[in-house]
Image (cartoon, rainbow, N blue to C red):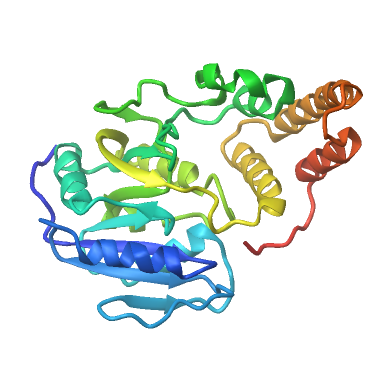
Length: 305
C-alpha cells in the first residue's frame, strides 16, 4: 500500500433531471479546501433539463440516456488524472471532503474507496455491503418483514461493521461516492453498460477485486446522500430487480432460483396485504402483486430515468 497522494483527481458527476443539485455540487467542489487540482466532468445523460455550460467544468453531452454506468464511462474517457472520484449529483459534501477522502484512502491504494453515506435524516445508508445473494433479495422483498428491517441489515447484505470511524476492506461499497485508480478502472473495461441503473457498481468491484484492487469502506469520511433523486419511482423497482437478475446470471448466482424466490415472496406479500386491507389499511393487494410480478418477469421496459 502506498501513502503517496495523487497529483490531481478527475471528478465524474452523471447528470439527469433538474440541474440545481449538480450545480450545487459543482460549487462545493470549486470551494474545496486543501484538495489537489480537480478536473470536474459533468456528464449530461440526455437529461430533459440540460446542464448549462459552466466555467471550469467539462460538460459531456450524451445523445441518448444510457444510465449511470454509461454516463460514468463517458466521463472517464476524458479523465486526465490518475484517480477518479465518481459522485452522484444528489450529494452534500463538506469543504474538506476531497482532501479528507484522499488522505484516508491513501494508505489503502490501489483500491476502490467509499465513504460513510448518511441520509438527510442522518441515518446511515450502510455503504459497505456483502456480495449479493438470493436470500438477501428475498428477505428485502418480503413485505411482512418491512417493520423488522432495522434489525435485518446482515440479512439483506449490509455489512454492519461499516460504522462511523471504521476503516476496513469489504466486498463492495455503494456507488454514490467512489474513489478509484483511473488505470485500474480502464483496465477492467469500466462499468458494464448492460446494467441501466443499479448493481453496476457491484459488478465493477467484483471484476476489480479479481484484478487485485479491493474495495474499502472509510467511515472516517462522511457524505450526505439524498438517494433516488434522478430516478422515476414508477420504474425503480423494475430496474433494480432486472439488474439483480442480470447480475445473478453473469456471476453464476442462479437467476432462476432468484426469480422463484421473488415470486414466492410476492405470493406471501399478496396474502399479507390482503389481511392489511381487511383491517382497513390503504393498500391494493392485487395491484401490488401484479406490479411485483411485472418487475420479475423478463420484459422490455422503458430505459429513461
